Amino acid sequence: MAKEQNDKRIYTMSRERPATAVLKMGIPVTIGMLFMVAYNLVDTYFIGLLHDDFQLAATNLAYPVMMVMVAIAGIVGNGGASYIARCIGANEQEQANRTLVLGLEMLITGAVLMTGLGLLFINPIVKLLGATQNSFPYTKDYTAVMLTGSLFTMGNYAIGQLLRSEGSTFYSMVGMIAGTVANIILDPLFIFSLHMEIRGAAAATVLGNIVSVIIYLYYYLSKKTLLRISGKYIGYDGQIMREIMLVGVPHTLEQFFTTAAMIVNNNLAASYGDISVAAMGVANKIMSFGNYVYQGMAAGCQPLMGFNYGAKNYRRMKELIRAGIVETTLIELGIMAVYGIFAPGLVGMFSQSEEVIGIGAKTLRAFMLSLPFVGAVSIVRNTFNAMGKPAYAFSITVVRQMLLYIPFLLIFNYIWGYNGLILAKSVEEAICMLLSVTILNRFISHSERNRGRR
Image (cartoon, rainbow, N blue to C red; front, top):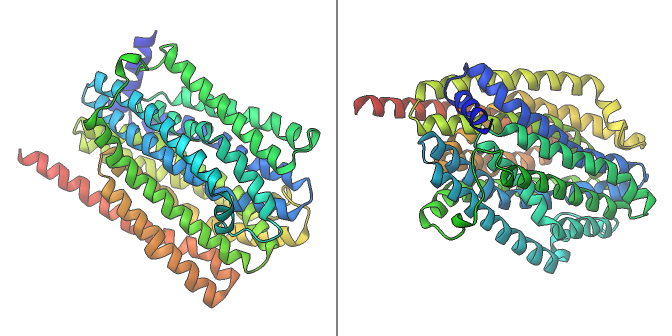
């Protein structure tokens, strides 16, 4: 049975019709990620029932801490996954197993450092996040609990990526869904029944991540996966470490740039008051549904790209990229239509404040204009990472966040105020899509020509 499942995974990555392969790999990841949206949406929903705009604002202000955890976990999740997919494509099974185990060792070390340093410097961290006097204690409470459980939050992201790298998207999806269901059940219990309020929301999130990690490890240890966790692979391997870091570190820097942009955005929004921060937070959480769709499709495509790059099948890579961009963009256009029509009602699910609903609906409608462009950018970045060419993915992110988005935030905010602030991302994403697709097409065509000369 295991051999049959493994053969199906290899067939999907190597010979399945591109449009079908993208959907087969992308949809389970997307479904799992959409359930992960519930981690934030459920927290926001139940905290909204407290009718406290300062606690609602705190969930948005603390979100960059989660992004930093994901960034650090991305060293293993993206760097390890990229190398594993290439190893499988090149039929190097033992090297793939060693990469998996070394990745887990790195993950544990990074999580311990994240927890220790984060709790040690929590006060300056919360101030940096843009918390005001009113939202500071709530932001600190939420952040402290999240830092305490960083091993499991980071593990949920990284181990899920490692599973997907071998084509085990179903197992990854099951783990993400189970963790989300646990969070949904525990949120009202901790927030209301135990009177923990915002600390309860964070605790429920951590416990949900623990459930996901346990399920992932169960699949590995029960030998249902293509790769194996074994004590014989424990130890340092310089070549594998270099391969993981080659892709993982630039990806982590990309996440830090994204976090920096979000902090700039939150600080600019804070100048318009805590109500605006709360409204933007709700809009961001609703937007996360659309964001996780394109991220899920791109993450599902990454093993396909890595496998076929390892096999030097460049023609199939081009077909997969085209299919991925078209399918993702069509889905995002559908989500954009829903946001445009139902924005006030969607925001109203998380706050009863008319002011928050009004500002939040306007913000959501501005944010949604980025959706037709973000899928292509994400697929391009993930393809470069899958090929072990992180410098290209990193360059796209530097342009995207540091040269376009942050300057646009500052300039647009200065000229048009809050309206400019919320439109900056859509303009940046449209420009970035044109640049990134052009760069990837030229790179693959160049690789194809070089192969033909040999």
